[in-house]
Image 1: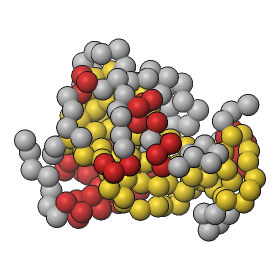
Image 2 (image 1 turned 30 degrees about the horizontal axis):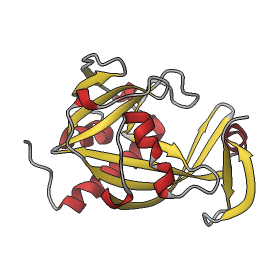
Image 3 (image 1 turned 90 degrees about the vertical axis):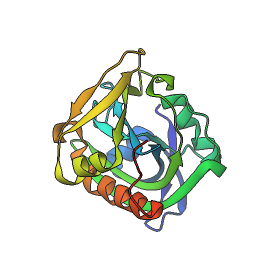
Length: 204
C-alpha cells in the first residue's frame, strides 16, 4: 500500500477518512502538500524530478515538494527537504507565502492539492546538496528574473546544475522542461516573492 493520506473537505479540513496515496490521486481527493521555494542569494533553486516519479517525471519543479502524512505537522513534513536535497530546515527559518488549492488532471490521476507554501533563504553551493536519485535527478540554480521569465513567458534559461551523483549537469531550460499545468502557479509565487522582497534580488 502507498503512504496513507488524510482526505480533506472542500474547506481544507480533515474528513476523518484516510486512504492510500494512489487512491487519493485516483479519486481526486483534496489532500495537504508542502511546497518550498528556495532562494540562494539572488538565485532561485529548482529541482528536476526523477524519471521514476508517477506524476510529471523528469520535469523541473519547485525546490522541495511533498505530502503531509496522517497526523503530520509542518515540522514533520520538513523531512522532505532532507530526503530530497539533504537540507535540515526548521520551521523558524520559513516565510509563509500562503495555502493554495490546485487541481491537475492526468490520465488516471486527478491531483487535487492544498499546497502549504513557504520561502526559505539559504545560500549553499550546488555541489553541497545531497540528492535522493529516487526523488530528484538534478538541482539547478538560476537568476531570479530568469526563472520568472521562463515560467511566465517561456524564455529559455541557462541553468547551473548538479545531479544526484555529484556531477556538474548544466542545462538550457525551456518550456518542455516545465510542468505545464503548474506554470501559472509558479509565476504567481515568484511574483509574490518579488513583492515580498520589495525589489528583485540583486546579483551577488
